[in-house]
Image (cartoon, rainbow over all chains, first blue to last red; front, side, top):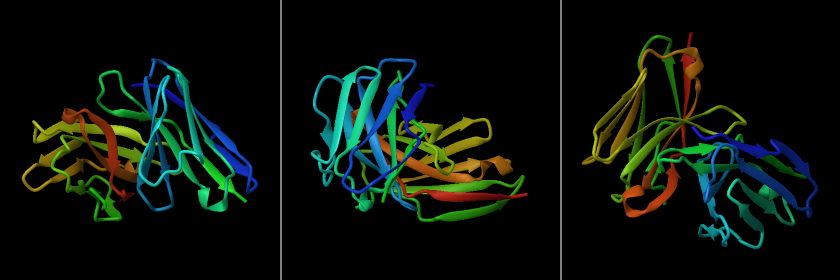
Length: 115
Length: 114
């Protein structure tokens, strides 16, 4: 399966600052990556679909100006949480669709804590 | 609107016995289903999938059954091992309709008792 690397795995930031999370597809070129968020004891919720070379597609209720997504190359997508607030504290995970467009492969996730 | 539901938040099974995890869905456009396993503070790892043209798919200790008329799928793990203790998510997509996005259930925490 695809190898997906996500960085950092854990970050603590002050309220009002911005945090960037990187998602890299290490062994193949991914035109599409997905960003999810998981709150404690809840499901993985799709936030946005990141498309290489074009604007991301955001799910309903997700603020595109707050969660900036950049998919500048076929191997890298970044999610920037701008002006973070404590309610943004969550587990953020990216995924890449496999070569055969079957299963999705996930990064290790990033635990964001905003204090 | 939870389109994929896992009604059992937790399940405990004796080691060596069969674990059965259930998942129901409401969207009739879903035609591809997957099960993922997740450990704390890690991303989900793919286990097994099934297309709507099948009603069963088996891979080693893992078997997924799909009942389209009931909009129900289940994951069977036999024999269960301590390393199977994790949270299991089912997910669905409408691949045949060009929609690769995965919709996840809320997860079931499986605990295997030695």
